[in-house]
Amino acid sequence: MSRLTDNLESIAEQIRLSFSARDAAREKALPLCREAIRHCSQAIRAVHRQEFDQAKGLLQSAHNLLDEAKQAITACSELSNTGFFRDAQKEFAEGSITLALVTGKQPPDPGELGVDPAAYLNGLGEAV
Image 1: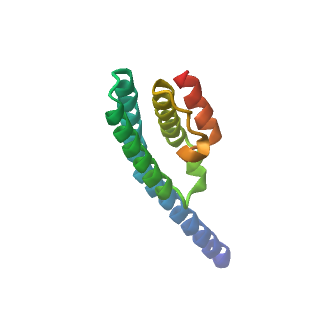
Image 2 (image 1 turned 180 degrees about the vertical axis):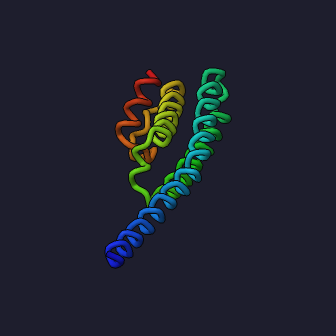
Image 3 (image 1 turned 90 degrees about the vertical axis):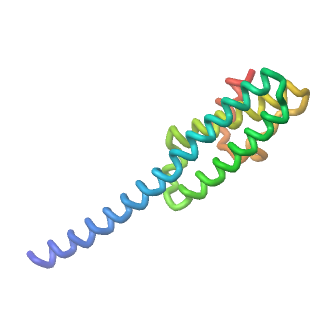
C-alpha cells in the first residue's frame, strides 16, 4: 500500500506544481491585460477628440502590454482562451480599427494586430 501512496504523492506534487505555474502566469498577465484595456479605452476617447497622436501612443503601449501578457501565458496555453486575455485583445482591435476608420485608413487585419480572429471580430463589431 505504501508504494501506491508514494505514487499518488508524486502525482499530487506534479499537479500542485502545474497549478502553481498556471496561477503565477495568470497573476502576471491579468494586471497587464487590465492596463492594456485602460490604454485602449483612453485611445478610443482620444480618437473621438481627434487627438490621433495620443491615440497612437496609447495603442502602442497597449500592444506592448499585450505582448508582455502573451509572453507570461506562453507556458500555459489554456490561459490564452480566458476572458481577461480575449477582452484585452478585443479592446486593442477596437481601438486600432476605430483609429484607422476615423483617419481614413484601411483597418489592420488580425495578424497585423497580433490578436485572435474571434477577438478581432468582436472588436470590429464594437468599432463600427
